[in-house]
Image (cartoon, rainbow over all chains, first blue to last red; front, side):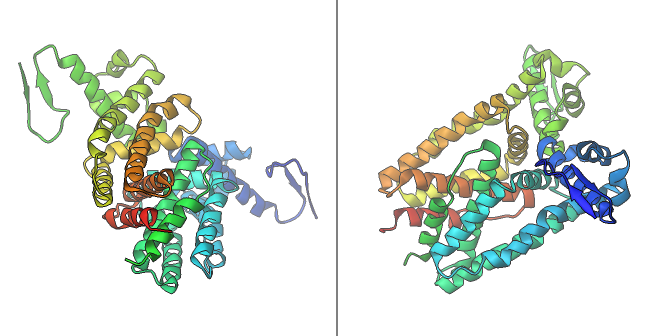
Length: 202
Length: 202
């Protein structure tokens, strides 16, 4: 048996069943995202996560014994849903559809998943030389690039790898700009220019 | 009279003349860049700058009385040289020259000015809602975009503003990727695709 109060705030969940521990872990991870997105990666500690999640002191440590385990858990929490969405996103049949799908992903990452994206950028910037962080995110980035490259191969681009790199760089630049400045940009026009350049006869 | 020891480290400057105070200010600002680039914006305090600069406690406070003054000084220190370089960069006569010049700027910002760029990204990410930070950097960004847009107008692009936005977004994505992942990418190919797309007949 479980019940949840629909207050619009996922922290207010009451439960009487065995799922509580798992939800406490999720609650800690959500709070970790908020801490990093709003206060920076340096602010991530077991204590700051407990406080943000309004959990008793020591709760986060029950699930993530070390700082390293907390970081790994956070990276997995951020990147797993994004990696799951890659296969769905990348079966476009035309260049226009590819541009639409990448644009939809950019919009998702800067609206519904805005806090996750802000946390990811903050982790990236702080994780310059930390192998665990680089590796935690590298898989998703590589599979995304490979999927876009395969599309451009099918569409007959002269240099599919270059086209993929340019689309991804532009998408990341737009994401970064939207997170930082809050600009509301439809990415389709910009990404469309790249697809046009990649597929133009030379 | 002044003399400097050529140790490759600008902190080791000996001086007996009146320029010392100005150089102490510069030394604090350079240290502030290092603090933010390596430890994050949250780590920026008068004390952390004194320590990084190996200055006596209280030195940074002599020049920047408040945290706000320190932040403003840091933003000006980072952005002023970049804004000065805009007019030189943006008198290209051909699309190829435009791509070369933007590429050279991307390379400069991720090699010689790498620490400044890392600090700027960290400040941006932390400064989401701080008007002083947004305004401090907005002028340079706007004049850069306007200069690129004017180039595309001269070159006959169908939508010069869109072309400028796409070039700048892609350049920012490449910069971000190089700072975070350390990839060594020549930006010309990617930026060239955008110029090609922007100038292709539709």
